[in-house]
Every structure is written in C-alpha cells, then in structure tokens.
Image (cartoon, helix red, strand yellow):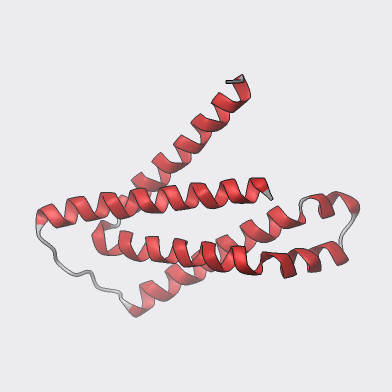
Amino acid sequence: MDRMEVLFSLFLIGIVAVVTWCVASEGVFGAGLTFLCVLFAGLLATNFFEPVANMIDGGAGSITRDYADVVALLGLFIALTFVGRLATDNIAPTEIEYDARVYQAGRWLFALATGYTTMAILLTAVHT
C-alpha cells in the first residue's frame, strides 16, 4: 500500500471511532435514533444531490463546478442529518429505560453502525 492509502485508511478508521464514541454517549435510544437519521439522510442525499449539484454548476465558476457533486452530497447529508436529529429530539424528548445488558450492547452496536454509515457516505462523496 502507498503511504497516502495508509493515511487515508487511518483517517477513515478515526472517523468511525470518533463518531462511534460520540454517538454511544447518547444511550441506546439516542444512538438508535441517530443511526436512523444518518441512514435516511444518506439515502435522501444520494437520491437528490444531482439536482442540487446542477444548481451549483449553473451559478458558479469553473473551480466550483469540479466539486459541485461533493458539495451538494455532503451539504444535503449534513442538513438532513441535522433536521432529522432536531425532529427526533422534539418528537421523543424522553428516554426509555432498558436492561443494563441491552443498554450497553445496543448503544455500542447502534453507534458503530452510525460511524460506519457516516464513513461510507463520506467515501461515496469522495468518489463522486
């Protein structure tokens, strides 16, 4: 492997680790909601980024045209994740109590799934 590939792989592992750590601190209920928000935000962003990129292409210079897809995909992903988290926090402000084993296993599994999904969407954005 090339040195840049190793550094990029470590960067991606770091993203998964940081997102997992941050999301796991929300508990099993918050981690589950965050996972669903990230999953649906990723699906919606990959579905609608091309029209947004075309709008960016139309009113931008030549430098921005090269990165319009990435900006549109990541911008939509960030905005939809933010709106989803805002909505879920307002709809379900209380947390449900779980057994300690379910709580620990669930929060780490949902957090790891959220980290992996976030990393996959970032890789998709880099690939576009």
